[in-house]
Length: 194
Image 1 (tube, rainbow, N blue to C red):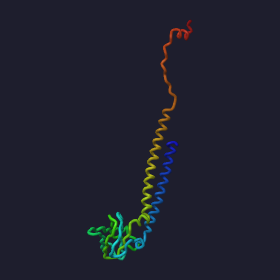
Image 2: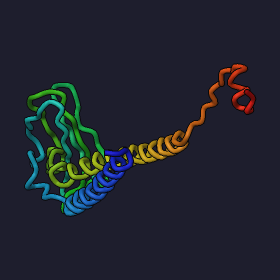
Image 3: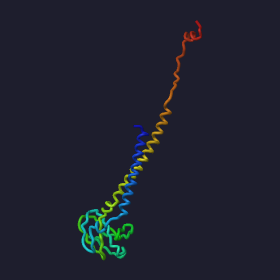
């Protein structure tokens, strides 16, 4: 397969990958915009209690939209260590629920929960299932497509130079060979002398 044909194949595959990534991204955005039911996906709904967590687990905390994020006081702890971080980011709000913060666990076990209002805790893996995974995959595919385009352009530019160099090298080569000096008898024959 010639270099030009290989480059065109890589370019076509890369453009297809970028189109697939745009479609996957659109699907992910659609799923995220639809949101999810906080109560249905919650691993904890109450004011006080305990929650079982996994090592390196990430969890989001919500409060009913009847209350504002600023009014909510939440403490999620194990022993003397507090794990809850308050973060009233409105972009994370879901239908009927306000986002109030998050926590990340660094062990397998149980954490205690205290709150002045009823809260719902959602395992962040829900976000991957509801469009986040499609967004991550689309980003990776898009990167591969861009890398492929760069490789294809590089091959095409390199292949063009090789063709130009080859055309310069083709052709006739005339080599002057040194002639041996003629003897006296040969020069007489050429002149017609006996």
